[in-house]
Length: 154
Image (cartoon, rainbow, N blue to C red):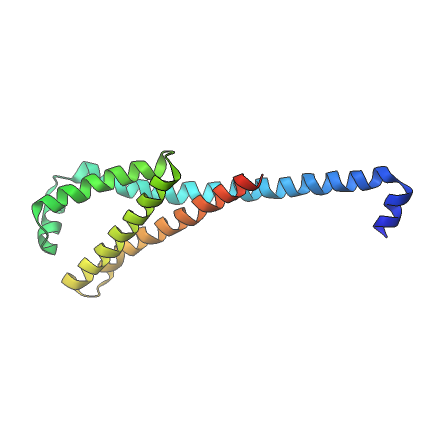
């Protein structure tokens, strides 16, 4: 039916095509905006967790926690510095490959932390706290790629 109308009025077909193009762009822009909001909320919270550790590197709580897990003193420093670097690399625009490696390293870190807590303390609720950070990391990662895909489609 629409094709017959467009044959009678060629301007109508052009109008429909333009309207569809505009509506598609609006939908993509809304989707991009939603993806950016979810990405920045999850990434901001994740970075807050990672970067706040810089203030507690030498705190008695951090030292006692690492001794409780039975890891050496040098590992506390390595882990804290790694969290600071990872927190910065997650929020600043860097090369995509470097960001991928940062996500992978943080994922390994959170999984290893969960294993360490469960092996020392058993399956108590506090042992699974790193999985909350892992969930934020996964959400951030998924929406990082969704934003890149939506931007490349525009």
